[in-house]
Image (tube, rainbow, N blue to C red):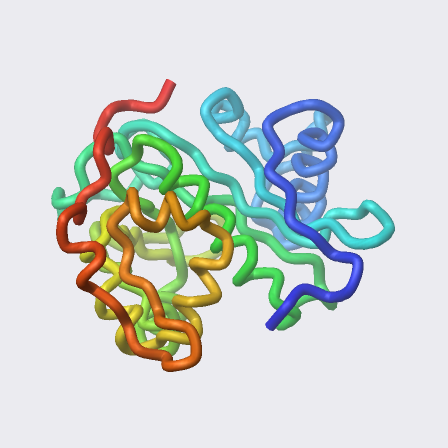
Length: 235
């Protein structure tokens, strides 16, 4: 679903907009009982990762934030997801964690979550991370796998954390990982690729959906199936 009229996505790395995003996340987390009160109006548990993270936010026509997600870069054990015991080491460091996903009540099912995930995924692909990792509820993992055909896999043990019992999942950032997604859900995959440039699609070795046919072209990506430079820690 497209965003509502007047809404757009921004990537935030500092300044007043960063403080606005911090306060937006804090207010909703506090209402849900996911964090303690803070005089700084921020989720204090996440403060330590401010220097190696970025917010991605959907902004409405009144310049108000309606949803956020955060990309955090580093080694698995140094990120929020590192609190969960790892059982799958196939995703080498550095990784990019998608965290702080929250949407204003009343703006759910309006394309916000899809646009936030797409922006976060694209930011991760443009970094030197090898994989995207996240903490998600088991029901959402099943939706990602069964409905969207997204190539997440469980990489750690589930336990109680900030109000729920999420499971750590991972998704590699290389071309072949998305072949099955492109084949099973070509319309969704074509929408994802709208946010990337043709040069990025070719460089990353991603499958493409041929316009007007819905067929997937894998031939153009066979020579470059792993991104060059992936695996060096982002600074």
